[in-house]
Image (tube, rainbow over all chains, first blue to last red; front, side):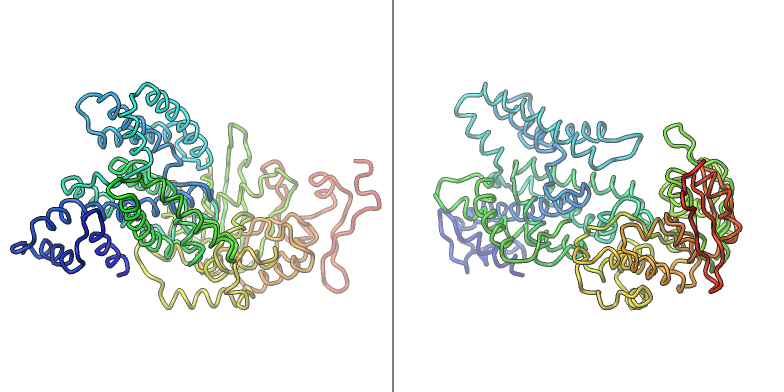
Length: 324
Length: 257
């Protein structure tokens, strides 16, 4: 509920202010299919730019937070985030190649998704041991592959010209400014279905964090659960990074924040991380585009600059850190 | 239910760990699995709670071949208390509720049967008063009791315990094993300490180098010869006038071996 209110209010704020009532009638008009009699300027700004943007921010926040919860539990490491398996480094290579050299006819998003898919495939192939996915091994392989790909990205950046560099920088730090309806349909379909699928893993995640043997004795098919969780969360993360770039911090901190507040039971943590992450990124995007309007900041700067102090405050306030 | 293990063979990295192990745990009894380090005790248990598929042999619970059941189905019959899984951030009640996992599909919600099973399990394991405490705040003995409660919440017909008294102080060891004895559940337990094993088990099975070298009533299994040849010490087990079996070690337990 709060999320919906914040999302609607967020659409009214921007370089052109639109009264809340007008915003509401535009949104309702489009939902009910009755767009006659709307102010065309407000309609244009709101429906073509702000609404998709706010929606994408919400999808990103929800998806990255849920993927973060899953990976922290899977690899049993509180420092894990959705990018821990090298997925962002792969996407970066793809995106930066297109941004600087305009390789082929691929768009930035497709290139980033392709890069993400290739890096995940490499990490899975090298991270398995006799057909078993071993979490600690996966993390190490992910970090190593990530470094190799980051080196490649840095090299490409060095050879880029200053104009291209700015857009590269923006992409690497993440932004939802490019949100448009035509891609949003596909993205929301993927994000909503993967997030929904992950919601069903609450019980099994609780069992998995007690250890592999113990989870098996509780009737969890550990191998299948791991593969399902890794593939689903990789698809989710890869899709988001392809459209929004490398939005950092959300997938790392929101899971911890939620656990600090509601405890470690994944049946509660998963849905609340989705809501909390969505809310958080909508607010951050609002800041990113209004603070120095009409200029924009990349999201990555704000997710960390505002999120980290809040997190530290919460951490100091009591309760010991709740691990996955 | 009765557990029948027959002809179990396990090889890890080309090295034979278990070689044709057979044993029986009669319904309602507590059988202790003892032997020196590396004799294959924990490996044998893993083939029972389905963590390790044996190369040869069968594990049968009454007439059901455990390894031919879906893993969720076998987890409703066999519950394990293991040495891992200590540092979870869940509360005691949440950990015990994990025991209900095999009774649920992907979407089913917690039922009143679940809540009742959790309540009963906590009571039998003596952790009802700890329900809201986070696991990290418990002592080793309390934590093992919670793991026992989790296993009981599975409502199993067979309980397997892997060195459940490890790292516990002496009082907590006696207390945990007397609780296990009082459950009346068919139990197979790997026990490191022979003194505790002879007190709390109906039968003992002695493993050495992956083979059963002795089995039966406590005094029949732990003969002076077994002490000497398997455990490498001079000792004898005898029933005292108060009915309790105790082990007496020689003045120089290692002498002349």
